[in-house]
Image (tube, rainbow, N blue to C red):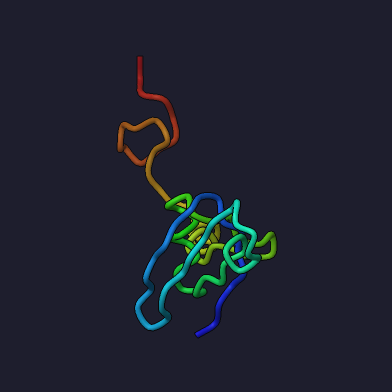
Length: 90
């Protein structure tokens, strides 16, 4: 399983199924604790939980999907659902 080196933001210990224990401690004298190896499939959750900061080169796969999602088509931007982009009559 591919692991990504991250930076620990808080002290934590997490078990990741299929990988094992991940330990982070930003104030530790051990480099392995300051920069824990996090399984690639768990990085997004660790970031969301505020445990680690990913490397600058890491891209959240979920964010990428949202960025390329097509814009909605049709309908009204005024919220009247009449299918036109014209404001409702006064």
